[in-house]
Amino acid sequence: MENKTIFDNISELKDNLKNYLETKVSYYGISAFEKAVRILTAIASRGFMLLFMFLALIFLSATAALYIGSILESTELGLLIVGGFYLLLGFVFLAFGKRIFSPVIIKSLVNLFFQDDNDEEK
Image 1 (tube, rainbow, N blue to C red):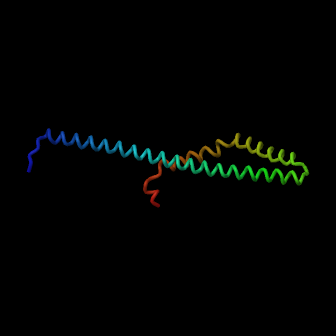
Image 2: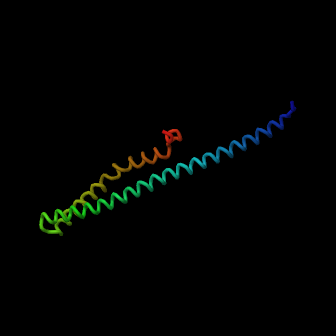
Image 3: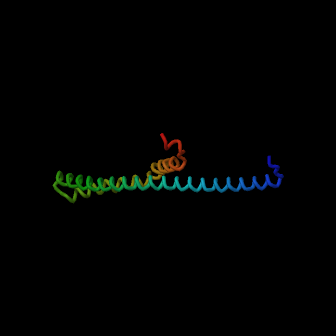
């Protein structure tokens, strides 16, 4: 057996500790990158979903405005009614939107950020 001095053991301990810390820093860097990519992917996919829903809403709104206009025999009045509805809806969202959407968005982002690797396998 090799006879090591205490200084050799301390030097070996120092090297092991340095390697451990470098590995830990690398792990946390990779983990942070993975979480950032997961969040950006979720934001991008939800953004595209919202874009397509917005486009569908535009066409449905135009159809509703033209239909209401044909019933009232005035296209302008149909457009005015649909526009007034969206204006009213905008004021409601302005008044209550932060209370409604903020907790949902925060909870969603927290769940994405703190999702374990074990949860991904399920």
